[in-house]
Image 1 (cartoon, rainbow, N blue to C red):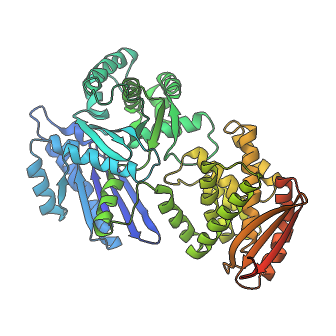
Image 2: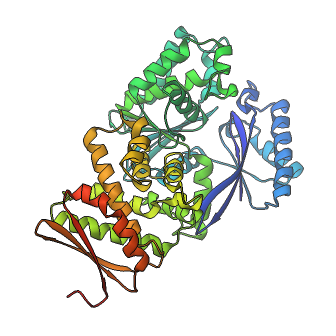
Length: 509
């Protein structure tokens, strides 16, 4: 399926494919900077020049769609076309000359689809979202993944530039006037005042700000989805950007050239909103209107395709499938990990922690997925794959935790992989991650033949020695060999000697 997003700043064609095993995948993304908002005349009509830019863009997109043989096309127009008084004529003309039917989204629809994308791709339960485009700005409030309120303002980065900026980029005096105007608009919304929830920003300007910030701090991993900044980070960014000339902004790493003139306007809007909301966190969603439209489309035909209350699980299935791991194997690894952890807690080898168990079970599903690329260096591949891909429903900090656990080989490799993140975690957190990594490596050794033999795990403490009794359905020769090799790692964790015994089903009372 294809989504054509006709915005006020850009027109974008995005190609998607979906199936229940692989989930939703984007396989093509083409952007045209059109600035349609600048072609709205004083009488409210879009000029012939603006209409022709839209027409030529859609014609070129239609050729691409014909090449890909995509016939399921949903074209959505937002503020620029919505605000044009001749929009009916524009839509009729596009249908006649390109064959593409344009759906004119209402302000409420635009806000809803943005919320839908955030709810299904992030684990933040409650937040205020902002999607600032070229000609409109949508604000929503959601609580426990349920939309409470939404509003669309008829201003965006391009229209604000037209209203407040005299030169190429905004100056300090213009910023002050812009800030006063924006605050006045946001102050009308009693439902966001001092709610002290995170602000989640959607759209190209937000993505660009995140990329610039990552470049300025030498961020050690890839991806901006669920990237998090504080209010102070936005203040530092504001100082950093305001010192630059227009030409310098156009050359800045992480910033698209076509956003150099509007990026500071977007930043001013974000800072003002955080102040009104009383937000401590500013999060980025890479998923927005387009993803909301496609998710909504898929849900119509398959209501169980996405679960906004369990975002990670949906994404984990996609990762497992992508790297050749079968569902039965994942279930065994998860079940064995949970059993071993709970047994350890019974013997006071660990103190039970619900969040720790949840993270362990997630890591069990993707432990050593780097084997798919190469067996000998699977831990390096595992760490890189997990740390450097956006994992829906997981913060960047938890993503690194997952990568450290799932790639565990030994203390030396753990130290090497964790070195860039020493300011992310304290010493105790790293110790716990290292111990859990060793535990997962041992569990993984219990299924080295991929036959899913383990039925149960039971621990006993006899004469200060930990006895691990493992019930298996078939003769586990490979597992016996491999688990003995991994025994030293958990002996270090338990600080006690370990005896491993495999039993046939029915041998334990």
